[in-house]
Amino acid sequence: MIRVQREDFDPGAELETLSRGNPKIGAVASFIGLVRAESGEALRAMTLEHYPGMTEKELSLIEREAKRRWPLEASLIIHRFGRLQPGERIVLVATASSHREAAFAACQFLVDWLKTKAPFWKSEETAAGERWVEARAEDEEAAGRWKAQ
Amino acid sequence: MIRVQREDFDPGAELETLSRGNPKIGAVASFIGLVRAESGEALRAMTLEHYPGMTEKELSLIEREAKRRWPLEASLIIHRFGRLQPGERIVLVATASSHREAAFAACQFLVDWLKTKAPFWKSEETAAGERWVEARAEDEEAAGRWKAQ
Amino acid sequence: MRVRYFAWLRARIGRAEEEIPLPPEVGDVAALLDWLVGRGGSYEAALANRGAIRVAVNKEYVGFSHPLAEGDEVALFPPVTGG
Amino acid sequence: MRVRYFAWLRARIGRAEEEIPLPPEVGDVAALLDWLVGRGGSYEAALANRGAIRVAVNKEYVGFSHPLAEGDEVALFPPVTGG
Image (tube, rainbow over all chains, first blue to last red; front, side):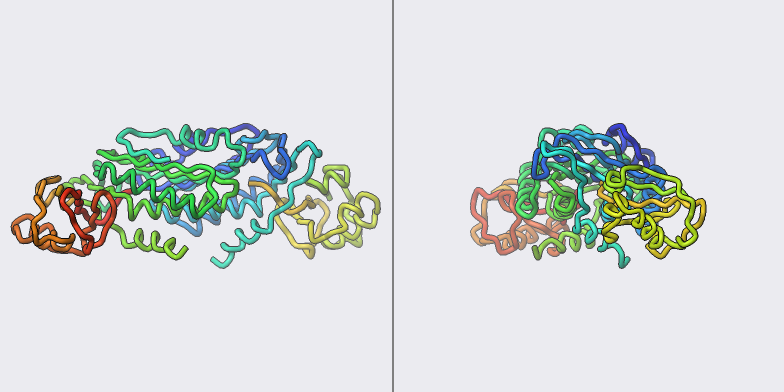
């Protein structure tokens, strides 16, 4: 399941909903991304811009690809947009499977692909002003790991 | 942090506590293990026996090793013992770091090592009676991956 | 054709989107970029480094050789930084 | 010396723990296993397959060649299955 929203989410409630009532689920892996307060200079806030319509489309494609590669019983991606304070949650990715191997691998895959494919852009506000976050080469490499499969 | 307990835990509250107030944390990876209802025959319940004293000792060693290998800001292992129903939570492993790579790797490492080192034993109740779960060769292999590092 | 700009491309160009009747010489994305650069000013500055530009047509990633048709929604943006 | 049994070893032997004064011929874990098997009955049956037995002395994993001393807590159990 995919959700793109401005408001915060409740990780405990989301994880509970993800696995409830499916007796095949033995493993739930999850990832929460948070706004760090530091990026060289003290961060005052971060704004996430996105491309409505394309975001949901890309996240659905990514989720479908994970389900094709691993035997998942359920999965969830929630990604926020708008202005966020340090410490706030940005993203939740969760996967549920019978065994942990599939849950872990799919969760990591989803996060890696999301980082390089989902149309979100971060700008940071510090005392020095506002600036757009640059894409990390490591993120391209991390996503590249999954290409051969 | 390590907790070995009979009672259930609240994953949302635990994850919130893990990352709250530390501005360096940008990534929280977690794993929840649940009692599956199926294992060939329908499962009625599962009982987890453990070795009090040694369990805490081993889990602390495993956690210390993860902190030696990766730059973690926080980590948590909660493992339950006693009689559990299908669908109930067994274990929570969570790791927090500045970046996701360390959080994911450390979380997976903790779960893999815990599975082969922490002195817990499962017995399953089905219509056919009670039987001890056998160790999975895959778990030994999964833990073996981390030995070279 | 609707052209949309995101992140620092939007900020540098100074607008989020615009309607552009498909010029006859613009057959693909690369030609659209040339055409926009030909406007000079903020367009030329924002679109100078093509290696930093990603493109979607009708909300799907495409390469610079992707053909364009009247009615398409073309989006230009820098590499993504979400998650 | 206190000897503790867990999981199916406990169930087969029929007790969770016992006090055993260290026999003079028992210098290490392997010798203790021999000595216990020598009791016959449920001990012999439970401890027959040594490849299925893991050992901790004073709550730390050890191998079969680990020396034993009076006052040690020795635990015998099958491979773990938690998590």
